[in-house]
Image 1 (spheres, helix red, strand yellow):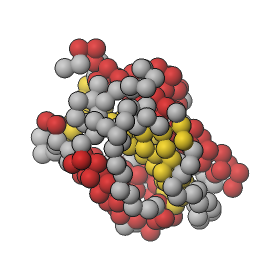
Image 2 (tube, helix red, strand yellow):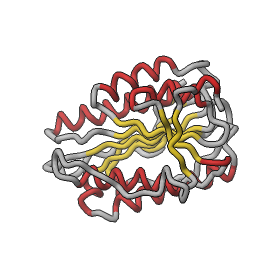
Image 3 (cartoon, one colour):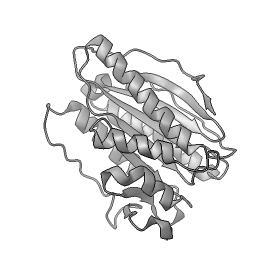
Length: 242
């Protein structure tokens, strides 16, 4: 079930004479997400904003929307310039409506894209950031979401950042991530420290949103190395779920 009652209402983009980039963050708040995990997520959402707003150009160009999902999908921060993003104290409970969360995220990205078109704003490729510790326990599968993600990613209309933590389901991750090489980000060893992932995502958004058109962007990060608690995991044999 999707609940379209945002805690914080939509705000229009600023600096319409500049390119813009939308970022949708979908946070698993189901009952299996531990207290330590959700506390760290709350802190990192605030840190994500801070990193991007370090650059005054990115602060004008980046728009963000945050949704949570358990039994329902909730838009808890509708679209706004990143500097207007509120802090959160998310809590957890219930099942995991991952399929509808991804579908809702894409729907919201499309809404912001239409608004850019209406205002004559040039759009940079949007990011959909999804983080979960499980699989869909409401719909039972993510087939509809996976098909739409594949269509959007292969069509060059979106980039997916998928982070699995805890006992997340690799088969589910594989379905959602097949369009970009069948891998995902994973927090190692049951850790709930998401700092490296959010730092990498935020610095990537900051770099992409402020780059020259067509410029190839690289971002220094420890993610994927032995120095980080976040790895980049191949999912091609995900049915083994090991």
